[in-house]
Image: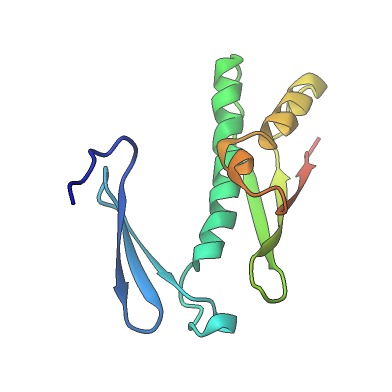
Length: 142
């Protein structure tokens, strides 16, 4: 069986005992441990695969807002976010991701509206199954 050349970013994974894995980012060599969550037989000592989905969404939202701000000619400043992953009863799947985003001060109403719209359209958000509910709230200090 011949392998096709990679056309995207390749990550590799090696499993380990006790429901753990070690993931390696191909381009950089950075590694990330994962583990099954406590409620599914793991120790809760690291990100679970579904935790990574939630984390990917929060990271993508913030990164995309910074990219758009730069293209629009303004500096966004520090954004902070939390994300809560809510699982469904069996069969287990992510039911809802609740984002809370604290935006920097000094944004005019037009910038706020544009950035909030962009948050719902980042690549990870667009990649999630439509059954996954995504709730986002934005806080502004001014």
